[in-house]
Length: 417
Image (cartoon, rainbow, N blue to C red; front, side, top):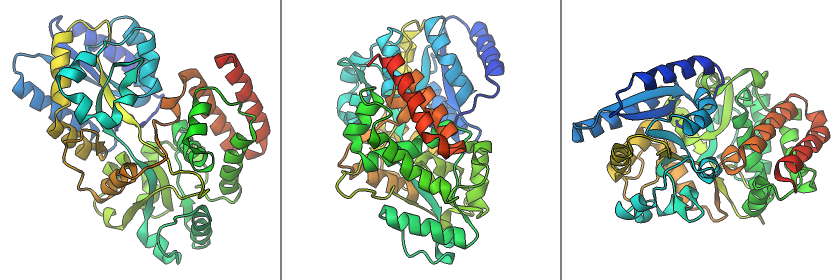
């Protein structure tokens, strides 16, 4: 999915050259659009179907679309916005959007929100699309996070039902390992997949209030509450509950572990549902990250994917027409269905995919707040250093204290607090 984060740094320079060539070749009056995609699932075809519908409804608009891999896209984003950007770009809400809005690189879309009724239809994600009282993003789908798991492997290992508590989760891991199956798959080469683990352990142990303070640089990384999160994580690593050589795998190469029954669980967003073959889906379930501390209100990650108009866009009129079309309830629902995500438009049809339904109900019932995800809630440089540190920790958990000391030094340098 957008976003979501399916991220690889490979081929960055090649993608940059292709994008530059595409933009130079585009007619001045065309509406240009760049979106980030993964090779997995139906991402590109889902995008293209929506764009085809837009062009059919707006035959006078010459729409030029460039598809770029996620990590290469992230590398190029700042350069585009500061120099000669496309007219519309796909991106992420929260701090990731605010970072560019703060620097004057995004078009103010507040009038579009008012004119098109988005304030009502997208009320649940308006705050994440807002910076200093103004809206800069047009929301698309969003994801719920939880555990994909193989029901048949649970049954074979003697696990009765989905784990609701941390103790039940640890017991399930123990039984799966004893049955000869790796309990948990994680694509640790993509550092953001490790960030999902940190997010959820922090949200379950310390709560969303603490989590957001940490994300904004208000809390030292040497705080005992931060170490408690890593200590819980370290237990899983020390007990060898993750697949071997996890740092060698990215998200595009991890799916076979679940498909072939080599691993039983994976913490991931609902978008991953689109990558599960039909032959395996009946045996695939999805459950909420278990309760660690019953006294901590349940919070969730629910990152929102968006479209933005760069401040330096040349064809803002047609860009706004495209955004208005993409925000329609029926288009929002079609995109969510194709990507395996959840529609963020309140008038959109609810998902019928079983996994998406669980995700939808999870976010709908959340009482402790909805976070945007580690590298979307945090200042980019700190997020990059934090995720790099997670890989270092995962590689050698015995270095935890040294990792946290380095992170604290980085926090003080970036936030000067």
